Image (cartoon, rainbow, N blue to C red; front, side, top):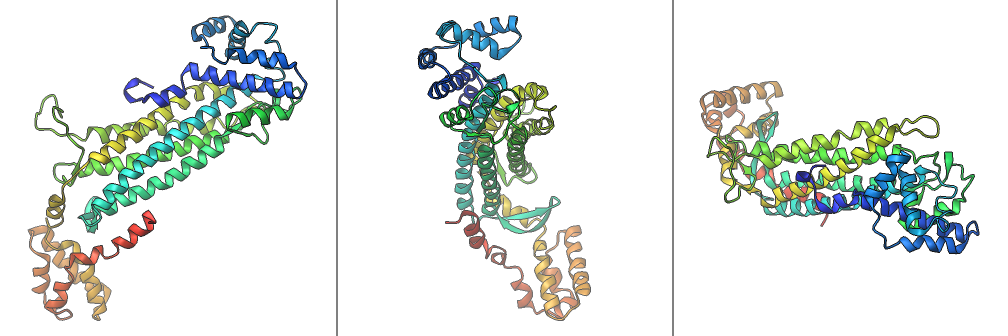
Length: 434
């Protein structure tokens, strides 16, 4: 990933140095287990740990790989340069390259998931704070982009909280599913290595042994992992899109924070553009772009091919680094987001009283008017408001069909804004559960 959309902790997980360190730990722990089983001499296993403080030379490994055309062999050759050829002769015994590559990849994905889980928790905290702050801040709800009925800004934040809370569950399940390792040898039969070695290595690395591997860990696990990332990215875009709409000049119910010295346009000095949420929309697309290749990686030839390998070398770092950045950026947007309650009320009253039409419709039916006639009475008055910006309540009071069923006090009562917010506390209790 480019540095512009990267944060150091996630980037470090995918560095060559981290990768080779994990490879080393896999090999060293495997040697320990084989020594415990009496398969290799204890002194050889202990010799491997002489490299525990070594900074593996990435350039040297690349130099060896240029000759061997094999990355794991290049690493093992470099390891022997530190440990000694004789001492290292039992390293990788009975193992195949995928034992190292796949187990390492899952360690990296597990660590990445831990960071992403922390990111989502930080976002949840920001969403909850803003939800409580604006629990009773009334705004108009919209369907199809058109005024519908009143809601609150707190409920908007609360529904985003609930969505992200579900995403937290998805990420935690994805982490659990991807946290497996395999040290099962060629085609996964353990013919040349004892299953106890796999159990030991996985325990040391915080993984569970893969119940049955071929020469690779099954890629349905990875497909599920990247699918979870894609859903989180889509939720980011969902929130970002709402903020972008709120910041439109004609709406202006909320906006990204605009810092001192910030410029919105090279040509138009008045501009305050929703650049962060637009950026988040684009980043979400990039994360989702990893999902289809991850699913296509599930189907491999027989016990193994490497058609998945090139894909994962890209989507592993790119998707996790991008999502990590996007979650942190969205948290910042929510924390600093500007809210304009007066504009919310102005927008709701742009067509005075119109958003109370359903209450009047229901009242007419309860008063004995057929639903068809009630709808006709309400709609013809609502259309006058649409067309002439008149007051909906006044139009109703002047309609003899309406007043024949409802008295002035009954009509007046239908315009009580509090009617629409009476269950906000109930919804909040369901969402926040405290």
